[in-house]
Length: 228
Image 1 (cartoon, rainbow, N blue to C red):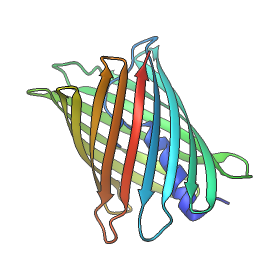
Image 2 (cartoon, helix red, strand yellow):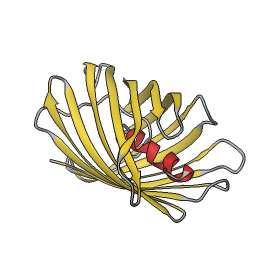
Image 3 (spheres, rainbow, N blue to C red):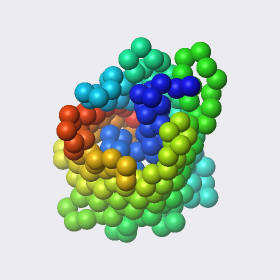
């Protein structure tokens, strides 16, 4: 069986693939047919009640038409002395397209399999959620997510939620902040930034946050995105 700390870590695979980096909150943007993105990220979650968990994730996503984009992600994880791997398939389909003047609404979904080192892959998590993004005045964006997730290793269903605000185009930076969580634990706060290296092509990002509870588990991520 998966170790408890590793199971918690790999259960985040589906959620991670449904996030608008560097946030944990997804946005309502959907790639057009033939548009693709490669994303790579490092994630470290630390606390006093469990060993620190580290993940390295690589993901490729493309627009496939019919208002939909699909993605495949691979993840390697370590928690204490335990190592594991995960694979996730995710997508999102818009019901209302996001534009500069119109709020967008999409349905996002993901399934993930995982294994501890030396074991076989097995289904670990399923997630589905509604995603709303709304443009505000002066290059601000507001994002909200609400959905359901299932962690097989813990045999638990959860209601998941998040809300984020984003300020785009501060020079070559986008600045953002969010709160997120589920109905089984204390919420988290998170802040992030994205830097445009090459316009519409290459981006670097980072985030830092903590859970609002005693011991304050912390979350750090760094990553990049290449559009092609």
